Amino acid sequence: MTDIDRASNRPSGRMNGGRALAEMLRLAGVGPMFGMGGFQLLPFYDALAQLGMRHFLINDERCGAFAAEAYARVTNRPGVCDGTLGPGATNLVTGLIEALNAGTPMIALAGDTNRGHSWKNMTQECRQAEILRPAVKELIRVELTSRVPELLRRAFAVATSGRPGPVLLDVPEDVCHGEHDFAAEDFSIDPTTLNAPARRIRPDRADIGRAAALIGRAKRPLILVGGGIHLSAGYEALLAFAEAQSIPIAHTMSGKGGIACTHPLSIGLFGRYSRIANELIEASDCLLVVGCKLGEIATKRYALPPESIPLIHLDILAEEIGRCRPATVALWGDARAGLEDLAEALADDANGTRAARADYIAEIPAQMWAWRQEAAARLDSSERPIHMARLCRELNLALPADSILVADGGFAGHWTGLLYDTKSPGRHFIPDRGLASIGYGLPGGIGAALAAPQTPVVAITGDGGFNMMLGELETARRAGIGLTIVVVNNAASGYVKALQHAMFRGRYQSSDLVEMDYAAIARAIGCSGVRVEDPERLGAALREGLAERTRPTVLDIVVTRDPARMLPAVDNRTVEIRQGDRVA
Ligand SMILES: Cc1ncc(C[n+]2csc(CCOP(=O)(O)OP(=O)(O)O)c2C)c(N)n1
Ligand SMILES: [Mg+2]
Image 1 (cartoon, protein in one colour):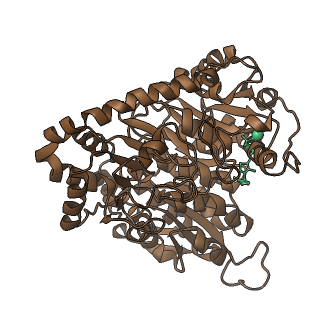
Image 2: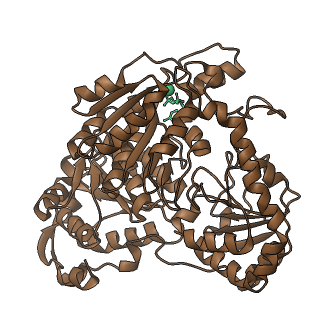
Image 3: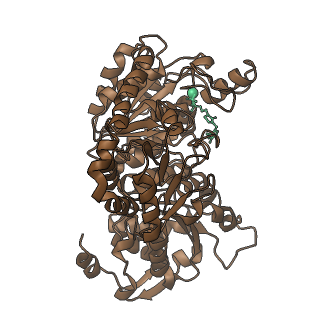
């Protein structure tokens, strides 16, 4: 819909607050919404029905927030979810914090008490604004029905500007049910605020000059990318800069897909788990950190990178720069804009620089080859129960370049973060590293599948995370989406069990799950379900799932039950990693 269409399609006249909310979201062109109704927001639901807008009932508001969050990641447009007064609103908290920490644009609506009766023990009344405020970038309380369009407009501006994030609109019952005479002019929205990033800022010229000088004279520079590269959609700028300057790129879990993992300049994951990247960081003489917070996992609990290496930090949030590691040069700005400016500043010497770095660049494929040789036994393993590395290899083989893999917060996310290879730049790997809650996989997969209906979407989740969300299989079935859900069935809260193995000599407490057949459960809900115990069957099962386009498929993958072998590598919080220790 063009802006003109939108403008000519403005409503006017007497309507309630719920209708005004829906009309504004319609003008904003939002995608499918996720929520669970309650009395307060019912006028909004009624308006959605009348306007023919897509809204999915979810079985837990947390999942609605997760689904909207994943939708936003795939589209860079704010995802929309809602919850009713009290428990509906409080159930949104986890998903909203995921969005807050990951910088994902979202609009959440929460019904609140009728102000004529607030503070008189209304049913479900709680101090929800206070509970939700630290979970969002901005909480906007709507006090007048007449201000609904204006404040929703504000919500979009906040959600997509600067570092994107979630905005919660707290809507009292009487505001939602109350009526107002609206003029057509009330319904306007700035089209630039409908996508993130709404606006781009460029780093200071002098800072770009200082950074370019550091990079220009470096012999072994490296780029470390985080999730900010996706928020900025800076893929072309990153690739152009790295190729022009012959600089390899390492990524965090969130930054995976900044360039294709299969690109010769990609050195894979760095931080807690790494193929070859950590060693290359140690040997680097200049690091350019792009859109990355340098948090605990990226830095192996602040052990990386060595303080002696000059570090340039490019980030949209000025206060993130220097939080965990002093920056030699701070570049405050949009990732794409900053990379473009650096490329321009260094363009004249690019040919000479590439020649000078030829030997350095030649090391990368050789090191990657050596790593692959060392990891081959695990990647090709035919052992039963299935080896996680083998599962990752089969995902690499089966998933086409345009597919999206959504990874849950359990150890499946770490395994795929390390071993899954995206084949083109973009949002092809979506892990919930904002808050790393388990349970994101299935609802995240729902949001991603609805955002990209033509794209193959696979969600990988632990059995514990899947148990949390089983009800959402009903949502996925009802939505009729061809989502493939890979359940890593180890009959355990595996990450916890592995840590108990490493730290408490195998004294396990509350880390075992009942052995279950998730394929049978899926079939009972009307989904397709395939249980896989033989690694040779993995490829065919994945292809079967990808081919199913109208209902979800659950692949129940029986993997190792040995807690000594559940993690992709030694966790440096529990044991010192020594030379020669295996890294998957
Ligand atoms: C909501 C939530 N609770 C607890 C944790 C801590 N945690 C991290 S991994 C993990 C184990 C999850 O089990 P499962 O989903 O089966 O994954 P596995 O590690 O077995 O692959 C737990 C409990 C978490 N990340 N999120
Ligand atoms: Mg498990």
